[in-house]
Length: 201
Length: 348
Image (cartoon, rainbow over all chains, first blue to last red; front, side, top):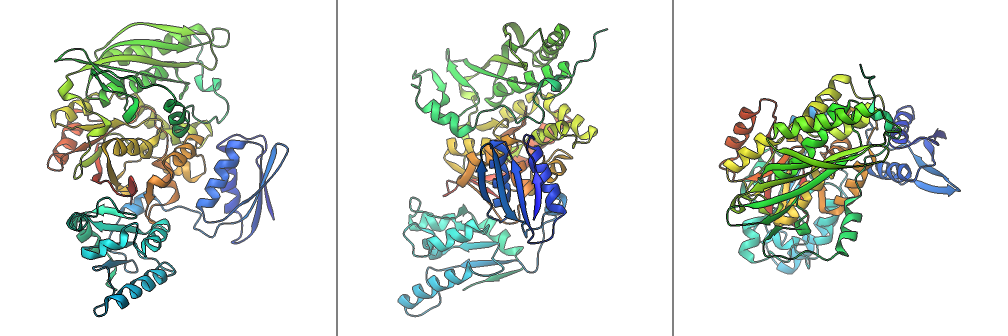
């Protein structure tokens, strides 16, 4: 167990010390961070949660101990310059939902299939970069839709849910949207054009 | 010859920046009665940069103030930055600064008096550059020192630019790089390269004069300046006031050189975390936006740039106009305005 003692240091020193400490650690190794500063405690916990670990905090008088493991996430963030070089990334994929029903045939079946598909999509190890909903597909993003919560979970995991704005207007759904970013065909076309591949369920 | 005095030595080591959390502030302001008057064109309701009051058909007054503790070592530069920052609120409303009052908190027991004079000279220099007049001020004994201005400006009521004027389809232009909070924090913690810190100081001293004039020329209706709540916080307030959502291409947002490295090393000011907490669930980031960029768009800015929403047909021309009239400018298109969606800001 590694110990990082930041007692007596004020923000942002404790975070600087934590980041330095994490670099020296093995994947999955445990760490305890001590701080006597309320603001730093909050910021350290926010940082760790953002890296995908759930820190445990115990407090004794004025000293707080944060126990966690080394995040598995890539600790060294990508350089923004590299980030700017957008282009086609082969293993990225976009899911296009063109109808509220999955497949042609019995609408009852189509509805169940769509629900099952969405339940499974959010469990994929590699998640889609975007889910694009158009035509009657936009109805799935409405608050009362049975897959709205699955789409929200995908969004929470960093997938961009895009809705066709004209389609929302066409069906008169402006006031019922539960999830997703209203887009236009320019953005939707661009998104599909640079996708590694596009899935139409 | 006066001895050199380091203003940053008056600030608690590595101290977090001085603005109250936005959420907390809204809570308190909610309790206060809101001034109602048919001539009050802009009140606190839309979280705008200043109050605006129409005095006749031709003229409205813009009234604003801002002050803060030192963010750099040199007193003259601190005066310049604090003044540029306070004047910016008038530019963000599409107006022209007219009169200013110095607001100073200063302890003559703890700091040599010549420092006081240097701060005022720096402030005066910027007010002069803005073609406005300093007509007085007020000083209180306090430590660490704080300085800023109360500013009155004017605008034609029809030329007023507010937070509430962004329309779906508009392009979003940002006129200065972000990362001043990061580089100031890095400077305090020995993590900013001197040349990068100098660039941040230089940018903070720049008036938003040219960019605001260009915005007026191109009929911009929605605009704000980026200060303590960071790009995300101010964009959120603007989109919310306009009842729209913003889509921002994080990779297009100009960063001050070195600011990313300072955050990568963990020198993230407390204000950044407060701003992140404020924007909360209203903001969505796609997976491709890394942690440091997410924090940088929440970095509290001092004397930051203008964020303007402009008709897409004029966006590129407006960017050219801003960058041609002020060679130091680095205005870029960073996103677009969407119809109001479940969240207010979408970063990708």
